[in-house]
Image (cartoon, rainbow, N blue to C red; front, side, top):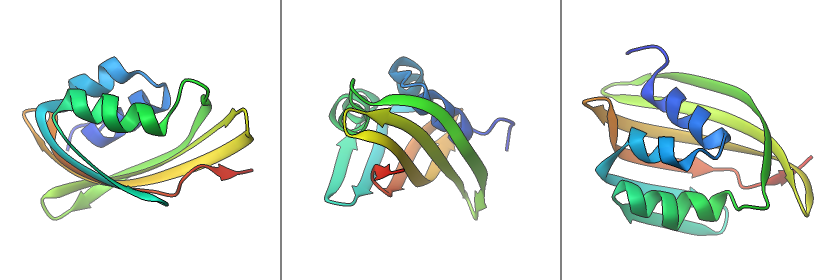
Length: 122
């Protein structure tokens, strides 16, 4: 696996709310599913993942302060990345953690499953 891994690059871009870079990391036909505390999410394609999922998870009012932690490794033929983000929004300070499993082809994520803690108050 290259350094930084594709999953780490995804986490770094997401923590900056750099959705343009996120879209470049995702394959144009990425198969994405995610689970947050109150909803299951599905999207096909990088544009849909960014507009219909990630921009719903991280709203304009959510100010990210720091990518607190990021870890990556392999689970068989998949990459695993875990990351924790700290920030604040109108409701106050928060921390959110996500665990992701992904498949990379030609440097882009083609398959991704994400489990999210939700925004937890700190």
